[in-house]
Length: 487
Image (cartoon, rainbow, N blue to C red; front, side, top):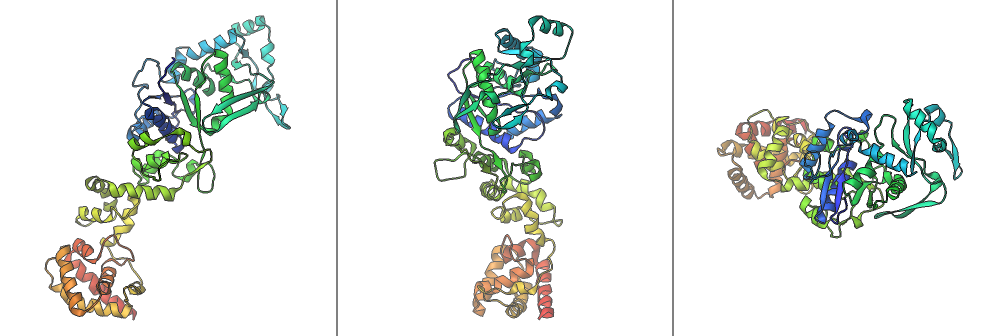
């Protein structure tokens, strides 16, 4: 299917949650296509039946939809080159048809070797002993091949790789890479169960679907020479290869499921928002030309240039992702933020509070939603704290001065009827002015008394507005007793 239009594909295997590396592959394939006004195709590669996980196809669809990576063609959107599910293509005999074409032209052959026979095949390459098939079935007489096929003997179909010389392939990121042909084993095209191997199905499908740019992880670099040999045997045009760098954890080890944040769904469950995850993943191996880090998907589409991808491994920096997520939370519509924050607030707050006001307090102070409970739990109950918390050099407060101030201000708070933030603040400001104090000299001990925390999402009067007059007076009185007992 020759085309002048850029066509990329995302071809996941339905084996569970979508790994961050797979999401990045999908994102880069989407951006490469959309940056040039091309097509982004979804193909489900389910030929490895042993690894198939029930419900995993739904995860693929759901993840692509939520991240905004909408495909132009796929199992649910026929663009004329379907089916877009490899098991369905296998049932139509597509892969066997092309494998037999290679046999007919002498580029592939039937192999009847048993596992026991294969285990004995070793060859020394570059001073190292490796297992490489010795081509013994390549030389079987045609009559014997036909006899064994007729007898129903198990077989695979292998590609006949050259054993001398070199094979060179070009990758946009890594440049020209050359391998010695003696290292290329005769690739299995069709397995004994009749299913194609991942490598063969990829080549056939990419050609028939008109894929112009193949985006995948750099763990497939070593397979590229084999792909090229198949393309050349058919006389097909070789696509542009874009191999993405490895993603590692902070210890520079391959990002694994044990990290706890290796999949898209892991991250969403941990309180990250989709927009931040997509933005963060885009920067795992790509460097924008602008000096900025925050991009919407549309902005990424406009800015993305795969020639600026890196060869070096990309570190999954959870600290950076948390920061980036916090930036997205700050910009989030307050109504949406409230709806998404509410379940986290209700984890620790059981009384009838003004949750909208609390949400407004925390929106600019958290990085992920699960930060909320520890930030606001003091509204429910003041934690036990050391009286040294009243000491603050900048505010010039001590335990003794705080005790005196709280005793002075308690009657003022008792006389105050309106516990809305503004009237409370006006009353306390008048008290500060009358006494000739600095603002923080009063507000620091007062905030400590009503929260019991060093850091809070709001000032003293905002907290007092939420907890109300009765609770405020009870907490200030308790603080006075605590200070008196501790001094």
